[in-house]
Amino acid sequence: MSLFNLRVYGILINDKKQVLVSDEYIRGNYYTKFPGGGLEFGEGTRDCLSREFMEEMSLKVEVGDHIYTTDYFQMSAFNPEHQIISIYYYAKALEEIKAPLRDKPFDFDAHQLAVYEQKRETETFRFIDWDVFSEESVTLPIDKIVSKMVKENFIHPA
Image (cartoon, rainbow, N blue to C red; front, side, top):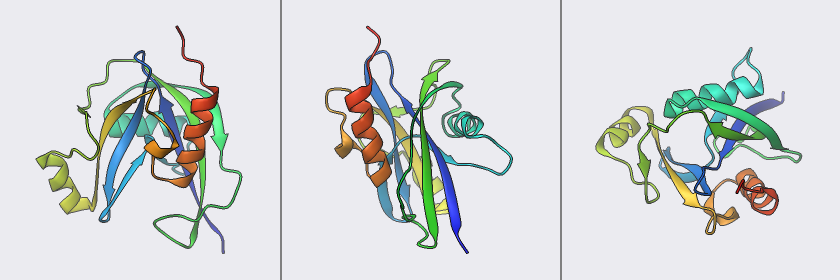
């Protein structure tokens, strides 16, 4: 039996030419990745991404152009019986970001650490300046591919 885990992520680049990332502490490991998450039964990929931004950041976004869909086998980092298929879109904030933003990686506050103790995972968000953003900025293999694509192909509005 094949088990697929469908994930949807957003690349949000602000007016200051900074890329939004999520720093996550999951089951004792640290990951820097793009905001997003798992597709739920009955929803489309764009609806999934909108929901994920609302759940994780209380942020309304416009889901933009498709960037990439995984086109090779990638085993899940969390369950070796699952194959990951990830879909990436550009995302644009439709309102000011209210979620706390950090300046340094994995800068969790007391509340986030308490959430970790209960759920075995927590996250925080930060922007990375475009000039230093690269595939080395993120942890997961598919995110690295997308980071390189975005860096090579994104034309930021003047």
